[in-house]
Each structure stands twice: as C-alpha cells, then as structure tokens.
Length: 186
Image (cartoon, rainbow, N blue to C red):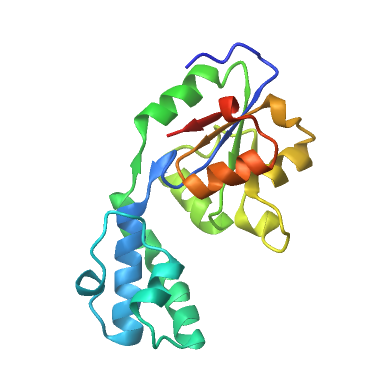
C-alpha cells in the first residue's frame, strides 16, 4: 500500500486491527460469567469470532440486566490479567512505522479509554498516536468513531484513510463519507 498524499490522516482501529485482543477478551468474559452465573463459557460458546455483549445475551437467554452489567464490570476488572494473551498485529504496526514521520496517525476505537490505554501501554504503543478517540468521547452521540474523529479534527472524508477489520465499522466509515478506496480492511 502506498499513501502518496502527505495531507492524508491515517486513522486506525485498535482491537483486531492494531492489537489482537480476542483471546484476552474471551478469557475475561469466561472468568466473569463463571463468577456471576457459575457457567462454563467454552461449553456455551464455540466460535472463532470475537465474543461480544450481544453474544452473551444470546447464549444465556435468562440473563437479567443486573447480571449482564455485573459480568461486564467483572470482565473489565479482570481484563488486565490476560494482557499477555494480546498480540500486536505486525503488518499494521509496520504501516504506522512507515508513515508516522510524514502523516498524522490517529486512533479511533470503540474500546473504553482505560482498557485502550492499558493495551497501548502494555505493548509500548502509547506515544505513536497524534490523537486518540475512545468510546467515552462519542458514546452518547448517534455517530461513528470515524465520523466523530473527522468532525473533531475537521478532516474532510477524502483526506482520511481508515484501517479497520470489522465489517460493520467499515460500513459506518463509508456512511461517514469516506471513499471505499480510502478504507483498508485488515
């Protein structure tokens, strides 16, 4: 991939794009579900997809709202125990290293600030981004992470190059006006 225009802003997702966090996420959910519901997650869920809140509710249909919230809280609190199960995605880091001297490198993630910063610090990536946008920044708005970052930084969609691995987020980037040629599916 060659990015010729130095005016272009490179906007990266975190989970699954820069850092593979699926196993750590799964293990944290597993521990939380075991504590709250005394259920074994691997016997309930067998998939190569990232485990999400939506899947939590679908595999445990009788889950009450307070139990779901408790599971999420515990998951967030124990996540740091599984940081060693996360891995930098080298191909993404190589892109960042190649363009970081000539382009603004931006993080736009659906992760909460505390978790994202924990991951970035663990992998010594805290200082590579000119700007960072977290779930808390746009959570109460009807706006995608990429749209929020572009609006905040006053970036034209034509000057944003997005690096993302999630199909839904790629669709959101296109809805925000980012041309398909400016979206790199990693």
